[in-house]
Amino acid sequence: MPQATTPLAVLGAGSWGTALAIQFARAGHPTRLWGRDPAQQAAMAAARRNARYLPEAAFPEALSVVERLDQAVEGVNDILIAVPSHALRGVLTALTPLLGSGARLAWATKGFELDTGLLPHQVAKEILGTERPFAVLSGPTFAREVGQGLPTAMTIASADEAFAQSLAQSLSADRFRAYTSSDIVGVEVGGAIKNVLAVGAGLADGLGFGANTRVALITRGLVEMTRLGVALGAQRETFMGLAGLGDLVLTCTDDQSRNRRFGLLLAAGSSVEAALAQIGQVVEGYLAAKAVRRVAQREGVEMPICDGIYRLLYENLPPQEVVKALMSRPIKAEFGR
Image (tube, rainbow, N blue to C red):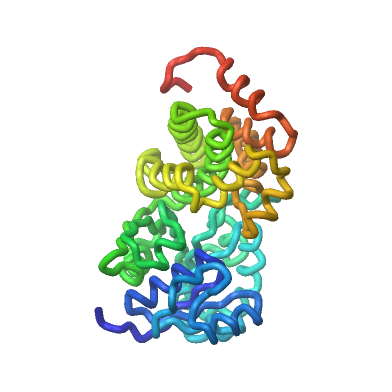
């Protein structure tokens, strides 16, 4: 693949930001990786790997580590933000005075903003206006496997088709395929709700509820995801694809998922605080449970599984009571409202 000349910036040096930066560089794109911890940045630059979050993945030659945000975005056309949802607003605000007129922004951030109930693209429009091209990256991907170069597919959604295609080409290589979509809302809703459902899947499996329970949670959880997404303006078919069903199944069934592991720890008797501390990284599903509940109530959308997970996490409802409440709901048609 021919080497690109204009650098691309990845902001956020956790496991996911690091993996995406590696993939951009592996695909032949000069890439700058920035994180908020200068000491961690210096350590990565020296070791040529992220020893804290992705130790097995060596950095390609095309990947450089920078310690200052202005260094990361200087002369860059495309910027990818890979930070937790609660940090997105702060990063966008810090970026505002540094952006060139032609800069295009994408993010791999998943989840509603807790205080406002806004999706990431709505936060971006509020801070940066509506003139810039925006895109979101999502889909069934674990950072460790991307870092190792294992075969992976994901979705890039943007209202700007040229931007989505450009990012897809920048990421794609022999073992990585990016698909494009115009449905930003659907892709973002899928990325937010699957984390909540993965906490529930881990909890159910940890309590020994069995495979029947797991598949029921995934399937009916997909219905809830689709219901809220359509209410917010998403395309229904998005939830049948990589960013919907694909990401949901991945996150609910594999222990690489921090959200699933969080549920497993709760099932083993850990408190919420102890489980979060043991994971040692952001567990998006914990805060997402509160945000999803608020948005569902605002939109008048019924989401009993997500609501049960919220009540377990924030109201100390025993898991057996959550299951009892779900199983005693009125009988109705599977595909009714």
